[in-house]
Image 1 (cartoon, rainbow, N blue to C red):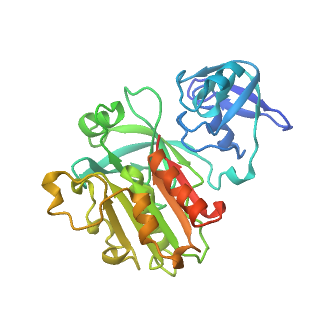
Image 2: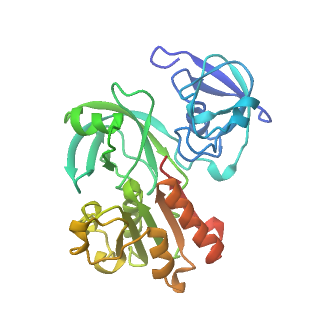
Length: 343
C-alpha cells in the first residue's frame, strides 16, 4: 500500500513471479517499474503499442475512446496497459520485449515549477525542480499529473540528466488544451505537481560513433535538443549532428540561441528549420526553405548521412512520412530509427 492506496498482484502469463501495482498506477507503469520490458510509445492510449488481454480480475480504463484500440480490439476485449489501473489482483497476457526493458526505471516524484520563459509566441521553456536527481536519458519524456486535469500528460525533457534535480521542458500551448491552459495561465511559480519519469526508448544511443540526424516537428523539438545536449556532453561533441525542424510559420521557428552552449553544434550550419505555411505577411521575410519537413529532408540530406542514427519526434503524420522516406527510399535499417509520435 502506498499513500493509503491498496496494491494488487499482477500475474503475467509465462512469468513465474507476479509484479505489484498500486491502485493509482497504470499497468504499464508498474511493469516498467518492475523492470519488465513491454512495447509502448505514447503512454496515453494513442499508439496502441501496449495491448494486453485481461485473463482474470478487473481494471479501470481512463479512456474508453482511446484511439489506440480498433473496433475489432474492443470486440475481442483487448485493452491498453498505459490507461488501465487495477481494481483487484489480475492475470494478464502481454508481449514481453527485452528491447523495452527500461535502462532507468520510472519513478514518481514531486517537483515544483521554478521558471517559465517564452521561446516563440506559443512555445515556452518550463523548468521544474525536484529534491531527487533528474535521472533520464537524452530524448526521454515524463508524465505530468497536473492539479484539476484528468489523466496524465506527457512532455519530453529538453535538458540532460543532472544531480541538481532540474527538469526542463519545451511545451507548446495547444488551443483549448486543458493541460497547457493550466501550465501557461494558472500554474504559479513554486506550485507542486507529480512527475513520473523517465519513459521512451527513442533516446540517444550512447557510445555510438555514428552521425546523428534529428528531425522534429512542433514540440518534438524538446527531445531533439536533449539529444543534441547529450551528444555535446560526449568527447566528440555534437559536431557530427544535424537538426531539421518543421514549423508551421516563421513565428514558430525557434531562434539559434536556443542551442547556445552545446559543444560542437553550430546552428548556422547544423540547424535547418523549414516552414510549411508562411502567410502573406511572412512570405517576403522568410528566407529559409518552405514545405513539409519530410520533403525537405528528402531533398537536402546527402547520402553521406545514410550511415547515421535517426531521431524523430513530432505529430504522427510527420513521423510516419519521415520513416517511410528513410526506410523505403533510403533503405535505412529500421534499427537505426528512434522515434516518438506525439499523439
